[in-house]
Amino acid sequence: FAINMNQLQLDEELGKGNYGTVKKVLHKPTNVLMAMKEIRLELDDSKLSGIIMELDILHRAVGPEIVGFYGAFFIESCVYYCMEFMDAGSLDKLNGAGVPEDVLARIAGSMVRGLKFLKDELQIIHRDVKPTNVLVNKKGEVKLCDFGVSGQLEKSLAKTNIGCQSYMAPERIKGESQNNLGTYSVSSDVWSLGLSIIEIAIGHYPYPPETYSNVFAQLTAIVHGDPPELPEEKGYSEESREWVAMCLERIPESRATYQELVDHPFLVKDVGRDVDMVGWVQTAIAHREKATAALIDSQPHSV
Ligand code: ATP
Ligand code: MG
Image 1 (cartoon, rainbow, N blue to C red):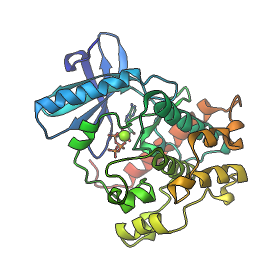
Image 2 (spheres, rainbow, N blue to C red):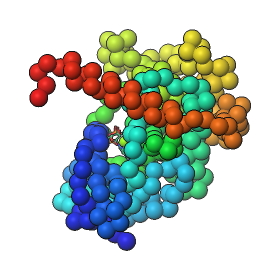
Image 3 (cartoon, helix red, strand yellow):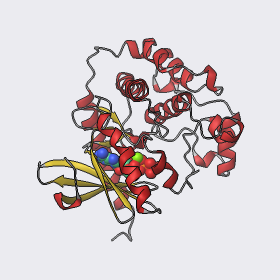
Image 4 (cartoon, protein in one colour):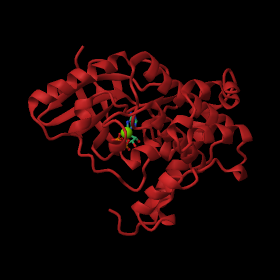
């Protein structure tokens, strides 16, 4: 069945990204809560239908580590994309109360299995692995969203976000011009995966902007500096630290493959282990709500 705007009752805003806004919506015919992403594009209608066709592959991207897709439609020059509503939000805001190693292993395992599934079953390379694109629900499930399925959509986005938080692998920062133009290899996603795991563990982006005088200095550090590590002081094991280091090899060919990451003791131990993900999500949400309330309190002029 095809979803359209008339069937949706709009609810609160869940977040804003570089390209659009995500809202919680109720799909009235089925009574299902969904997350609707609005992406503003500047192009003509013929291209829009191409995008909708390309997005159709998402109906086949069904797996335990993949955020479900319900359908997409467009109105004027906006694409509206309806997906599974993840009621605990994204991992960038869920890590403030700390992440014990068994929880980190479950998150890392879910991400690798999701990425491997996309690659092996659908020949999809994610291309935008970062904590805001890893969503969690109160059942404790961890799922990936926002992977690149539409070349046409990609081309129509204003690519201006070499922002202060780059998850791009060194070879991508150096520029595709040296490699085959436009090719993107899985190993670049492996770098972004390693960087995301460190951010989730330490609670902030691993190349903090205050350390670098400008974006250029920061990008230089990514390309030429020593890659960041999981901090031993926070109690992370040698195994987990080694796993992350295997993702953050500066030379793409030296990085681990998904199979090697799955077969590593850090993730082998996660299989079948009883991890209190539900409890961790509850604690993390409570911490996030406290932090948000404190932030609002500290702004005297807020309305
Ligand atoms: P970028 O635009 O660079 O991709 P982003 O991932 O933060 O950054 P969006 O994808 O537009 O931007 O998402 C905005 C926010 O909305 C996310 O950070 C996330 O917290 C929230 N969000 C997105 N999808 C869902 C969903 N399915 N369920 C719940 N919250 C979501
Ligand atoms: Mg996103």
